[in-house]
Length: 262
Length: 161
Image 1: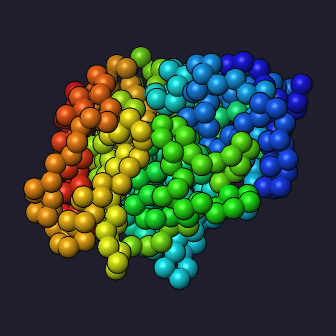
Image 2: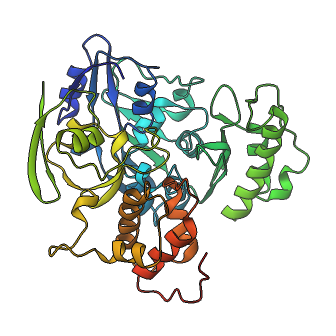
Image 3: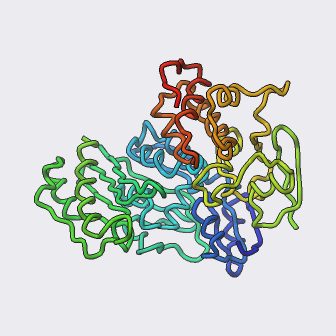
């Protein structure tokens, strides 16, 4: 790891100010960024840790919306959202391992937008709103391809608002060494339609499978997917699975998520 | 260099660190608490597991400066006040829950955190919880047995291997 300056502000305002300096980078729970720094794939001049900002750690359900502070660890979401949004709580409770879940944060996961991370699928399928230090961004406008988001330089995710669906489920086909999703599908059924978001599969990161959304909006059953096929031309192909295999898994995991969501 | 202060195993400690100093480096090199091990250094193996505020975390993937004011517990803080082994440590000894012993500090810390959250876990729950703790000797069978025994459950029906 190259050397860097370290700041640990207590407020969002101070963090935003600290991030204005050259080559400064925000640090969430660090469960991705610290390994990245160790392998020298990132070399910021300054790290601004968001872990000391208590106002960014909360979970509250109000008026059909689950709001989660950007600095809330996965384990806290898993425990505190279990009643209000069980599909999301189950996703949070199966990220990485228990120690990782005590550190990793929802804001960090979304800002990083790893193509195989779990949280982006929940945000996209729920139609979440990503709240930053100075604006609100709809999930549909937020994810912008591999490790890329609509966030500007130095912008911090302070809160994520998930509309709570009538039924939802996340199915992750786990890559057992990394515990990331080889393919993960989040299905959310709202009164006005179904949203399906897929992670782990596409080289462009999380995406909505619109054909499945249309079919499931008419009939929320695994059988509704029967005639659909998934194009494998943009799928990730690596030693863990071919593009065709991932495309196949997208359909299988979507079916399982629908069956589990009931 | 910046200074960091925290409470480790009930004792107030402080030291000068770099921004990039990891908690595990501070524990081992500054405080000399070498019971916490570094296995993979990539947050996969869990040998570096310690508790912050009673919750397990990987000290190889936490910066020392982010632990300002934290309550840290390491394997050195697990024994009882009179020096006797904690229930979990004793169970590891009784059930031979270690082979080479390298992963053991992390296993004990993870297992202790598990029983705090879930005092009577099933065998499947124990195995699931240990996802982030790797034993290179593959000695999981007796580790799981030790943890079930430490939770007060009867393990006589589980075969010794």
